[in-house]
Length: 306
View 1 (cartoon, rainbow, N blue to C red):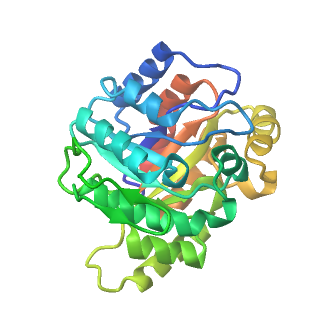
View 2 (cartoon, helix red, strand yellow):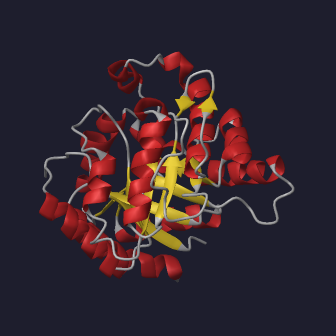
């Protein structure tokens, strides 16, 4: 069953806007309610305005208390692995070693166009970028590859965690993606709106088969679990059809496994992911962010535990 619940910072503007005070309140409430992770995602451009994730995560370090901070995900191909390593090392250092560096190539051709990076090169660049990130996190010097070169001197300062932060790699579950996770990652990040509980269980089994020498299964997390609890069926339908589906460009039928709907329905859907082997789930309230965090802890989490 799911053992930990984290939350995404509300970086997408869905009508409520942003403020530093609002982000700090969200982080403080999440910590007080016992959420384990505070996550930030990376986009340059999106179907809705998107606040920069690394900046937002840095701004709430103090309010995050002892929560694990996670990028879920950051984009080393677009930011550049050296620049991203510098930023992530600073967040890890300033937070006292609480960062998990979740990374992926990203799936947005618009982001790549804006950054001036060929979209068709994303996988080759990403594989090399992950190697560079790990190289730099370990305090090593010169690196020369096909796409990237690191400094002749190590990046300073290093993060708080020796040889780290850990690098978790995102994959929706393709064979190539799972091989990459098994080969190069300290953990696997799946996407809740791109994978069903049944498919998650299959991928978890495949990861074990890809790395049979591991004594323990590769740790995992389910990110971007868009969440909205309401007993109003019409409101839940509108949240799916008018807010989420247009925003992420997915058909409604493919997202009925997400925790959007009644308290009981949300608990049942998350329980299904727990039975599939999800160890951490990162919720992203669509609206009424703080109230939804409270509602989950007060009414849904107890149903899952039962």
